[in-house]
Length: 166
Image (cartoon, rainbow, N blue to C red; front, side, top):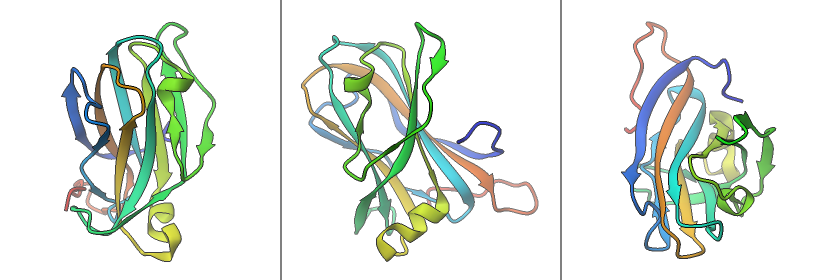
């Protein structure tokens, strides 16, 4: 989805950490999609403990930066494996999420969670404008990772990127 899109914003959603998903449930910062037509979270993993890792990823539409209210939503995903130097074909995840590490338990992988602003705004008729990624550690394994947020196809006219955190 994001290939060829103009990037309007790139920001740290979850800073890199040695045991990034420790504690069972990790959430990124919330990002406002009002200034962008599409977005993606890129999860960049380094070392993994072993092939038994399991981390369920869900995407949430949110009403504000806290968030006070949120609901999970569908998203498109794909992942990259360094050993093959290839991306998978895009697929759609249900609102229950997708487990990248169960599907592809490799070090130095990249996972892409992709969505449009219209999907965030329409989620359940709630009219939410923010988006957040949640990762549930379903197996207590160490994963070195960080997450970036990309805002694509900016809505600004003067080519000055708008913020995404407010």
